[in-house]
Length: 266
Image (cartoon, rainbow, N blue to C red; front, side, top):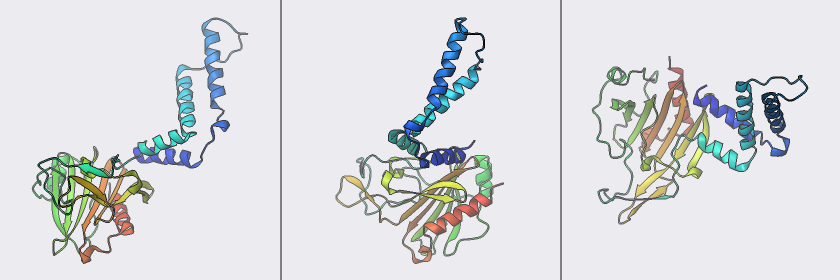
């Protein structure tokens, strides 16, 4: 079972809002434990049904799982377990002395990572060892620049003619490249669907304003990010910039691009 299937199971359980008063598994678990104890000590009327150790362990795990989801704290924990974005504890990030003061955050490349050379998709696939999902056709208003490889993560990069707008499609079999700059406040995350797969969408980013010693979360910054996981591949789409040529790339458009990528998987 991959992460998307686990997400579906957890979400369905959460939505049922199971009250703890209605959970009856615990009595069955206690009965099974009592039965084993009687057998172990040679007690009972000889009619006890043996409970296999594996079945007992599974029952115990299921009971703990359901009891956990029956509480608000358990539901919150399960929601966090599905996180595709790293949650930020605060809406401000401290700066280190080497960071330049600027009016916006540059999302074109991973933070603090020098740009890798642009290569073809075939060359990127040879480096990472898996088939990279490709769009069946170009994107309006954008020119495909090529692929960059960071470790085992592939970035497909697109740019507008005036270089004021960018789109990046990230793919990996091991997870996302993360830093504090990639984290987001929990209330900035929207849950959406890419086909039948659960995804997370975030508008905004942390930015540094002139004269400030901290970076502040700006939900109106021209950054839109979509993340999901399916078929063993982690996907992220990032739109940045205010170029008119890509104004059409809203939430619905990014989800459509995501669905095209999923459809192209072998």
